[in-house]
Image (cartoon, rainbow over all chains, first blue to last red; front, side, top):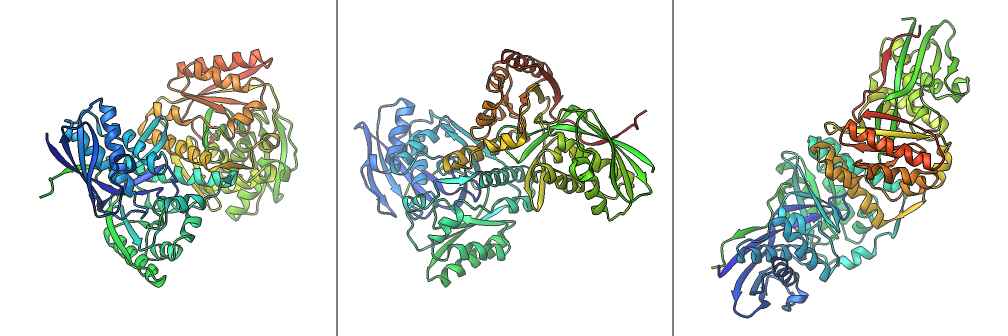
Length: 309
Length: 309
């Protein structure tokens, strides 16, 4: 194979109570990587469209994921990449992870798929480590789709959770830059034992609700008091958007990843559209333009797409 | 009805990673309460056998649970109780909860069962509050049986978790007194955010494993680093017993409730017997005699039994 393109979707990490351990794919925005065989060994990035990112492979998550995928496959060939950013950088939708997942998936296809999809998580974590931290809560769902529990990153241990029928996610991204670094710096260093108990109780209930489809239980489990409030405060209109989604009938709403995007889990597409409208209105009141995505909560992960025309 | 007897089983709270939120019933030891109608309103305790507990109803969890059950049922009748302790006090097996559950269940039967079983949790929590703290992780499984997630105590929100087929619990109780107060005092006041992430990841995995029957995942999720190590240190041979159970093939082992009992979750009755033997040997090496119980992990909860002869 000489050239192949792959798409990897945006993702909502944390999902409320699952700080650093839960993530889900969304259907819509995402990054596309086209990988070309080259006679010169090593990985080069030909160009990046749709966003301003470094072309040096070692400083770009697509490049790092490609290098690490080649290493894991034990293949020493030349690969050139074209990256098309289809989602905004620093939006809390796992932008760097989508680039990594698309690149790893494309390079693996280019090699004739020597690695299984789940094996691509490690190369993508290498990419995440190069730009932020070694996390899998965005790369795992971007690769695999659906709702993924990252039980451990070292050793890697992931669990696919079932998604209740009809569950729909609304994501609203305000036109506001919040760096992951700033969002991480705002987190408390420690929490009380009582808070730990509440967090473990809620994530346990959330997982149960995924298996049983008990959406009322799911709704009771999403509110989170450690990460969400401090991050929502960093986003103009963030807390108001969460409140607005709940008032519009969402099961739960919280900050997507490090923000500034806000997501809401809803019973239906209609409910998710209503929640998105309410969230966008809240951002408008805060003086921010925004965009929306409404997606099934069980969205597909990375996949092959047609080569660019 | 003039008199009725009820039995409520011992319970293993925390179950490793579920500090204050998980508990399971075990089949074997437990408390029995016989409730008699009386012409004199109020609750009196006629006698307590099998253990040294106060006869004042307000200072005995059986008495408090009975008072609170009458109040919840809106019935102002006289009740006299006989409590037979069938499990040791201060063993980490929910002794006070078993008394409360048996009393609440017996009194409700005496009244013609105006309340559902799950409604008896609140009166039993009143009883727990009178002697230690308002917890449901022992009383809920003692009443309902099986493995119960206490998502919240206020408002009460409990979830029954399914139990993988064949899962068996071994419990070994050393002849050593560890008060709940001392066990609570040893707990850290706060934990790091990284520890919170590990705890939430593990309980999420544990709940998933309950639904899917993935015992290998379950085994990976039981180890706990906040509560178990500090409590195991307070028990001579405690850490050694946990290690011994794992070496004998247990899926996981930890401190039962506030201790000093140690439990192990195992794939089969044979494995649980081997784990119990190994744990007892560890306690013997520490100079402590011990007793054992091997029970299905899906043991029944409170139930009516024959009146004492």
